[in-house]
Amino acid sequence: MKIRGRNRSSIRWKIVLIYCILVFIATTIVGVFLMSSMEEYYINSAKNNMQNTVRGGTLISSIGSYEPLNEHADEIQANVDAWVRGLTQEIFVVDETFYIVAASNANRGKSAADFLDCNIILSALAGETAESQGTLALKTPEIPVLNMAFPIPNDEGEIIGVLYLREDITSLEDSVDQSKQLFTRAMVLAVLITFILGFVISKSITGPINDVTEKAEKMAKGDFSQEVSVKSDDEIGQLAEMFNYLRQQLNDTLSEISGEKNKLETVLRHMADGLIAVDLSGKVIHANHAAMKMLAVTEQDIAEENYDELIQGLNPDLTMENLMKRCEFEPESEVFESAGRFYDIRYDRFRDENGKDVGLIMILQDITQRTKLENMQMDFVANVSHELKTPLTTIKSYTETLLAGALAERETAESFLGIIDSEADRMNRIVKDLLQLSRMENNQEKWNMKEGNLISLLKMAVTKVALTAQTKNQSLNSFFDPDSRVAVIMDKDRIEQVVLNILSNAINYTQDGGRIDIDLVTQQKEAHIIIDDNGIGIPEEELSRVFERFFRVDKARSRSMGGTGLGLAISKQIIEEHGGRIELTSRENRGTKVEIILPLSPAVTRGMPNIE
Ligand code: ADP
Picture 1 (tube, rainbow, N blue to C red):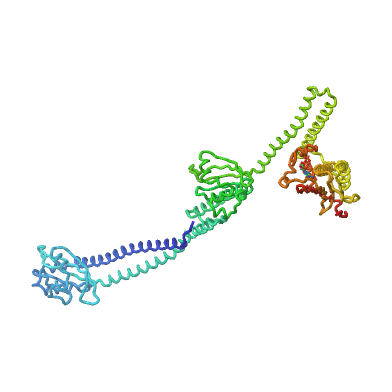
Picture 2 (cartoon, rainbow, N blue to C red; picture 1 turned 90 degrees about the vertical axis):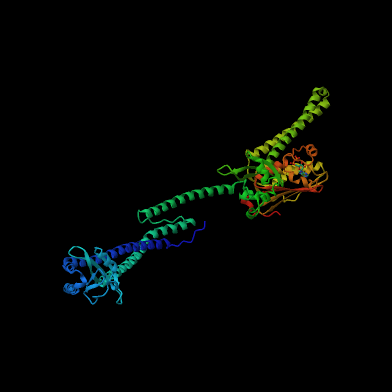
């Protein structure tokens, strides 16, 4: 997820701005109300003052007695002059024709319409006390004035004129202006203080939020060690507390998930079976190590190629489309062969929580070994049955012949019984050999391991077969030094059994007059018994099978020699039990060379003369 570039101060500035605007609005409202009520108060007190001055005196009543006014101008002027002393207001007495009958200044005799407020004069003439504010434009700067007009009634109560008072309210306006200035300054100061305080206070709000944001960012990057300090128990404190709780929970859950994931990955990695998961688009989502090995692909191949391309090498029939079709209703499995190996593939669709197909999952099992074993078992049973059936059939047929009357002829009967005896021996040998093999395989064979001299063992074996070789006019050539000593830890009887088997094979499968060489060399802590003949050899294509049970190149020939076809299998097993190995090389019609390799006895290896 892309995190938007953060302006760490934005909320802070917003808070400061809101504070300032609020304070500004509040102070402005207060100021406006205060200023206007102050102005109103000043004007009202000025008005009251004028009213008190007029109503408290006798001027109006005395002027009212001079009717008509313009005819008593001098008397009225005298009254005005007497009255105006000590007053700050200007006084005009105006009659109904707007003629100024008397004035406290030089405007007497002029028309009121020229410089007095006619509206209030008219109102006063109508019987009301009226007032107005205005300016005296005659002077610069203009002078603010407060005008008041009082009706002058005659004795009968009729309005005969107006007493017009005008007061210079410059000082009043000045003090209002000064108050305004003072207030404006106070307001600016208040906003300034609010700004500073707001800045400080907002830090206490934005600080923890920034802290949480910063730590959340680190957490998003995978660092879960972040803990936010809880400084208060208000909403911000609760946020910090919740953040810490969330962090802990997330950390625990993620550790749990990653633990499970690791376990799963380890299992998948070490699984002998190949596991492949493919999404609907054919992209391989997961393939474990075993699967990659079976498909002979690398991680890069998986990243670059889709499933259908990858499976081509193994089995072109296993395309995504084919498999999806086959496992539409239930999991499927099939066995196939590829490049000499056998595989068992099980596959099924995998679905999301809504039951919708998401892809295909398959498990590949290399069953080559199992198949081979099964085949071998089947072959073995067939071979054993066959091997036992042949002598049994012979025995049965000869016994039947004997029972049918041949018993009477002594010579024939003896020869038949001889055949029956030799066939029974054969069966006995087969069973013995099989039992020995089975004992060795099940680790039930008792080994009499002792240090012994291979040379004396070889000498003995050669002596035992010498007569047979002689009857075939074969030369048995021993190349080893008969007086030396090659010590090996071994079960003497078993090793002799092996050597005798190899020697008998050499004699049996070498034509009359042939040659058999026997040698023993030591090489790198190993003794090599080499038995080399120039006999019929083994065809190249059969070489790999000679150690298999019951395998014989020429069955009839082997049987006629009394062979069971188990000799080499037993020999191999015995030598392997001794920690050695047996190697056979042969060329058809040229001869066979068998090498029995055994580890030398560690105690005597040092200091022993090399026989080579
Ligand atoms: P067998 O009882 O038939 O000799 P072995 O297991 O000893 O059984 O040998 C298996 C087969 O290997 C023999 O049947 C024979 O065909 C072949 N073989 C073994 N040794 C030789 C050899 N020296 N020369 C040619 N063929 C051999």
